[in-house]
Amino acid sequence: MEIDHVFCFVDPQGDWASRLEAVGLSLDAGMHHDGQGTRNRRCAFDGTYLELLWIDDPAEAAAHRLRFDLRATTCPFGVGLRGSLPDKTGWSAYSLPGIDMWIYETAPEQPFVFAFDLDPERVAQIKRRIGAANPGPKKTLAAVRMQLPLEIPAVLAPFVEWRRGPAKLELVVGVQAEITPQLALVAG
Image (tube, rainbow, N blue to C red):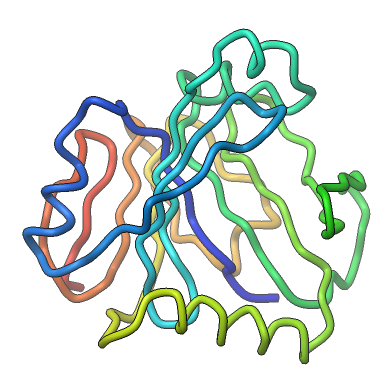
């Protein structure tokens, strides 16, 4: 397994896009997630990406099984994994059009964790697609650090460094920038 992407809920009216662009990172146009009540924009790194997410249809989000309306305010972070899921204990199947995924069931106060159980060739295709959609040099995501008042789910331990404190997500990508009060890019 490896990190597919990391997400953070943001204020859609915030200046996070200009803060990312100021350190040389670009965002795609994003999309609405039908049925989930969310919209996004993505910033590609080498083989992975950061997804900036917000609620754009509160009623749709409140009616959806994943309850991103609650997660956006209780724990605004999530991690998507990809590869071959070795043990499905604690995971539930979840289908999207054209892709099957697994969700690690946690309370909304915990980071949202999901996995795409994919064979190595499909993983390689995804990496090529991410690279083609975002041409040019990319930063490497060297580490993901979460600060939360609660411990992270054990399944995240191989992928995320954790410390106790107010909610904050730090991505180690070789540049220094505070993107939102809860999201920062750090040099090392």
